[in-house]
Image (cartoon, rainbow, N blue to C red; front, top):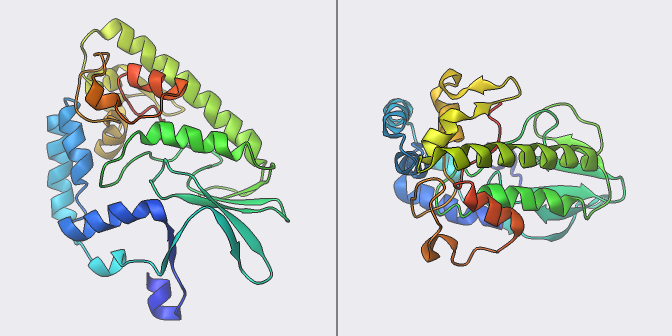
Length: 263
């Protein structure tokens, strides 16, 4: 928003960000309330309280940083005069995340969706998050339907083909799903937090206890409400309205855990 105030630039956001932005203006805090509630439901009350204490001490909510944009982006083409970009909604990192594809130059402005060395945080936002990890994987699949393009990410070095990196991310998450499923199958009625503690994290295969509190929160967050114990049968309330894709069904059976690496 500083760009708009200082230079008069128009600010556009993906339409999926609207609900979270409205929530922010209601709660008027930078404390991650939704994530803390879900940490408690995952059996991580002590971790939630540590993060709540730190976040409140640092909380300096500035509503001017969260003003409404000048417009909301949906799938389609944006004409920039000498360049046309295709807007592709890619929910996952956030509900309203979008990427921009320059089809003429074969360039993908990938934001936080496709990063060259790490995966993004998933579903760390206010409002009902649905199944953000499944959304993220679906959004990766979606990019394979478009021509391969040079990757221009928000973090990390530019270059490399988008299809190659997307394939790497999908393979990585398939491996993580297998890891999570294996732990759930031998853990009986463990909570999501307990399952997270039995997994290893990051490319360095760090133990959960070696992560800082923020990354423990990302690792331990569950992906679906109402709360239930990992491995428990999903009742109608937890599956109603969810697209029954193989990936989403497997994700629920793995306890609804985030499987993104904390890197």
